[in-house]
Amino acid sequence: MRQHYLILILIMLGLTVAFVMLGSESLNKDLGRIQTLDSQIKTSQEKLNSARIMDQELSQFAMIIDNSLTKDKKFSFDEINEFKTGIGQMAHERQISITKLSDTSKWSLPNLIEITFNMELEATYRQIGQFISDMESQDNIIKIQTLDISPVQRSDEDILANAESRYRVLLEISVFKVKKEV
Image (tube, rainbow, N blue to C red):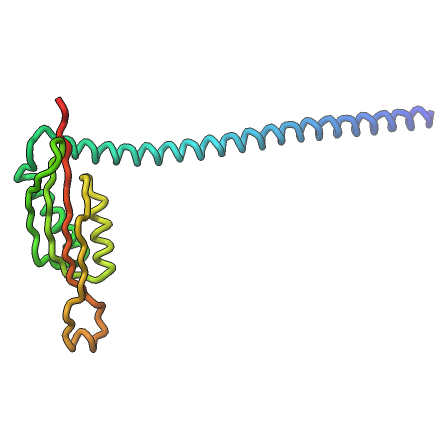
């Protein structure tokens, strides 16, 4: 009888070991599959995020193109004033003083309309960089033609107060529009 119990216990231990081995093998197989799926999901999410960023950049580019297409032969008075107002607001936000702001129409290529803005500003180097960055982020095709920076005479009070150096900036930018072909 004792042998029967011993055989029964050995059979139960054998079945337990077999059950644990099969369960472990199945679990390892499932974990491997989960890791594979997880890496595929991560790759897909990265592709999706890249696609979203590309979509945002392309929609911004499309907006610039839409703003730059026109049937007119020159910039309208309202467009010029709107651009000047935008420049004034950007300068005000950056605490830049505008000494002069003028516009002139230029002769350009047959399918291109160009207007040039001449500005004289007074600002620090940091403000100049931020202002130029703001200009580039506009929804127009803009080209900086001239950038001339020279120091402004500082008073004794500014020198004693250790104020940041200010510079006189002459900036000539061109704004372009493309005539739509009919």
